[in-house]
Length: 212
Image 1 (cartoon, rainbow, N blue to C red):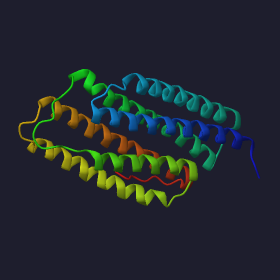
Image 2: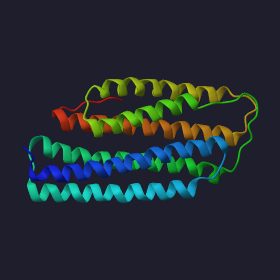
Image 3: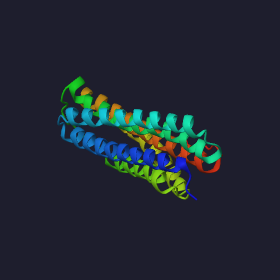
Image 4: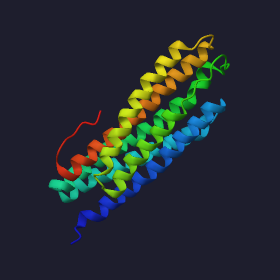
């Protein structure tokens, strides 16, 4: 039987889905622009600002539902989780913006010597973000175990990437800085995807888990 609070929960989920879609596009564009050394800052900044506005709407709506309905048990946990998740998705957009600012900050870099690629790391990060957002939409706990596995792979790729940068010979210092920052930002995006999974697990079960 539907409860009065259910409509509000669906509205918040819709806001989170919009945020997630914008965040995915922001990450994709930031990486594309990074690889091409193109400037996509204006578009990504616009998306990041929109995500922030939607995040504030989520917090306002969740607070309103708590005040009006005084929810208990799963509904209360879900509202608390949604507020946390809105922040995590906002961080997706913020890190995408940070990646887009690298070239603006340090300038273009030369590609010298061995070619360094972050394609595998990017693929894993896009996967873990997709899994986290699916968990919000589908409420399928089985997703968590794949997400945890991907997160472990990302940690390994992150460390491997940093070691590879150290070993690059004759590389442009700007290139080293740019890739080191981007690798770090991607790893942080993955961390926030894990936070989303942890929040949703708490909402569903009342149990707290740590995936990192």
